[in-house]
Image (cartoon, rainbow, N blue to C red; front, side, top):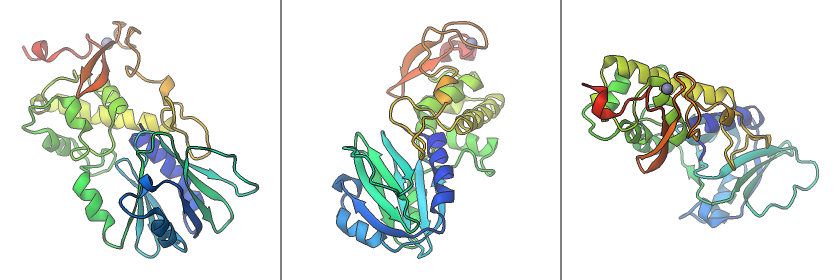
Amino acid sequence: MPELPEVETVRRRLEPVLVGRRFDRVEILDPRLTRPEDPVEVAAELVGERVEAVDRRGKYVVVRFESGRALLIHLRMTGSLLHVAGNGRPEADPHRRAVVRLDDGSDVIYRDVRRFGTWLLAEPGEAQPYLDARLGREPLAQAFTVKRLGEALAGRRAPIKATILDQRRLAGVGNIYADEALWRARIHPQRPAGDLDEDELRALHRGIRAALRAGISRQGATLRDYRTPDGGPGGMQHEFKVYGREGEPCERCGRPIEKTRAAGRGTWFCPRCQPSPDIAHK
Ligand SMILES: [Zn+2]
């Protein structure tokens, strides 16, 4: 599923083509996208809105309009946003869920195979409280310091992996980048989150940011459905340190990467670089 680097890639690609443009025609083809709101009503409300900014918060794309309203798009498992020039008819696509025609004649197409994605139209003043109630700190924000990470983890007995996956603590980190960050920080995914010492917190802070930045610089990871808005794949899947690499050598120490389960998710780690909680603190 798209995580912070994938969503940020989408945001960066859409920003230059959306800002200043007006939504001229909006078709929402799947009622699940806007549930419980009526898709026809939401589509009608969106017509005429002019885009002021395209932001990101956690895994949400936030399209802000000059009216003060905002469209909050969450891609969930398999959602993607494509921008296509409006010459000619787009190819038939059974997974197309919405189409926005912009006032320059180009289209933004939302496609989603599994149909878990959501579009929420927020009235002026609603977007911020909605997002803040669901999301913790932005790991790439300047204000996200080692101290802030420590505060988010303090006192937690839950495993570190589950804790950094919790969107209310840290926004935007998902299964892939959690594993990548923990490998970079040399921390076992099952360590209790509140047990990390000062050095480990610093390493984790650095690891989270480095893993996310690597993902952004490769325009995200395409395992199955994720596409950038021009339809191409990301490149990060070729550069994973541990994710999906069971049995392959750790690039730091050569030991084969192992797979386990943590936080209910497939989890990859190096058994030498990331010693298990029983022996990490002797
Ligand atoms: Zn290793």
